[in-house]
Length: 66
Image (tube, rainbow, N blue to C red):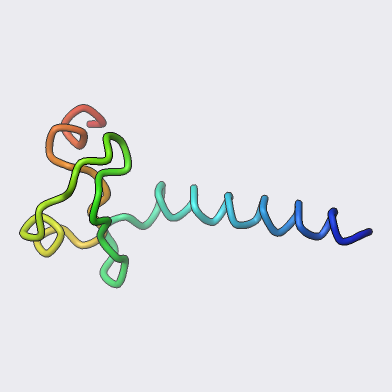
């Protein structure tokens, strides 16, 4: 294996961790809330970030995703 192979493997692992975190751990305590919605990019109000640990979406986008 050369350096490029190692980089590709590291990138794939990072992407898998990212997806796993989004699917399995959004509301676990200790998970940081996003400051901007992952879907539309609009800011997530501080009150929502504090109320919902690990929040990743604004209210309209969360409603659409449910």
